[in-house]
Amino acid sequence: MYALAIHGGAGALPRAHYTAAREAEYRDGLARALDAGRQLLQGEGSALDAVEAAVSSLEDNPLFNAGLGAVLTATGTVELDAAIMDGSNLRAGAVAVLRHVRNPIQLARRVLEDGAHVFLVGEGAERFAAELGIEAVSNELFITPYRREQLRELQQHPGPGASAALDEPPFGTVGAVARDRRGNLAAATSTGGTAGKRPGRVGDSPVIGAGTYADNATCAVSTTGHGEWFLRTVQAYDIAARLRYGAASLSDAVKEAVSERLPRLGGSGGLIAVGRDGQIVMRRNTPAMFRASLRSDSPPSIDIY
Ligand code: ASP
Image (tube, rainbow, N blue to C red; front, side, top):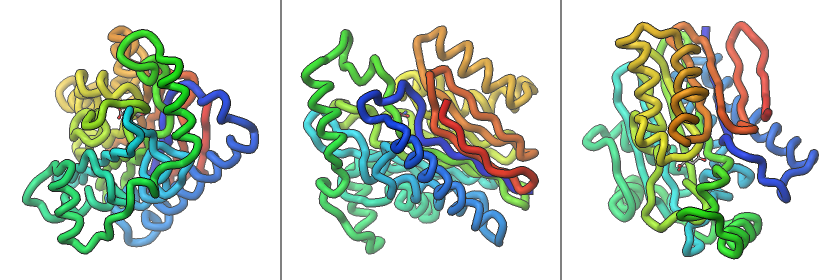
C-alpha cells in the first residue's frame, strides 16, 4: 500500500487575490502535484522520489510560495529554502537562502545523496549547485506581479509587531509526505518563507526536525505556518517523538500539537503527516490549508477549508 499527502500552505486566504477561478487553479495545481507523486509510487518509485516530484511540481507553479512565485523579502528579492528526508535511513538534505536555483528541492535531494553534509546555505549552496551542473537562474525569474503588489501592501500598511506578514500567516509554502509500497517514509518541504522577511531569515521549512522530518519507525511530517513557532517547538520531530517515546497515535499527536500546543503559544499553521501504516493526518489551526492526499486503496481528495 502506498500513500501520499501534499500541502500548499496554511493561513488566512489572500483576500484580493482569491476568486472562484483562482480556487480552481489552486486545486488544479494540487492535483497535478499529487499525480506527479502518484505515478512514481504506483511504479517502482520510492517515497523519496515521490515527495521530490510532488514538491518540484508545486515549486514550478507560480501560485504557491515556493520556487517560481515565492514571496519577496523586505528588499524585494526572493530567497528560497527547502529540505527533504528519507525515513528509511534518516538521511537528509537541506538548503536555504537560495537566490538562483530554480528547484530548491532538487538541490536538497542532491545534498542528501552527496551525504557529506546535511544543510547548505546561500553562496556555498549555490556553488555546490554549480559544481553539479545545475543552471543558475536570475532572481527576477521567481518574481511575479502579485508578489510585488503583496510586498507593496505590506510595506504601506505594516501591522503591529515586527511585520504585517507575521500577523497574517503566509500562504503557499509547499510540502509532501509519502509512504511507498516497501514501507519507506519520506518528507519534503519548500518555501520562499514569510513575505517581507528580513533578508537572511530562515524559517522552519528547511530545518530538519522543525519543518521536515521522516523516520520509518514513526512518521513523516511537513509543516506550514509561522516558521518561528515551528522552529521553537521543533514541531515535525515533536510529532515523531510523541509516537516514539509516548506511544501516542499519529492523529492524537498531530491534534495535540496543532490544535492545542501551537495555538496556546501563539503559533498558527498546519501540517501533514503519514504514519508507518500509511495513515494520513492533515490538520491546521488556520482558516484554510491547501492540501490533497491519496492512497493506493482510496481515491484522491483535494481540500482548502
Ligand atoms: N513555515 C514557512 C516559513 O516560516 C512559511 C509557511 O509555511 O508559510 O518560512
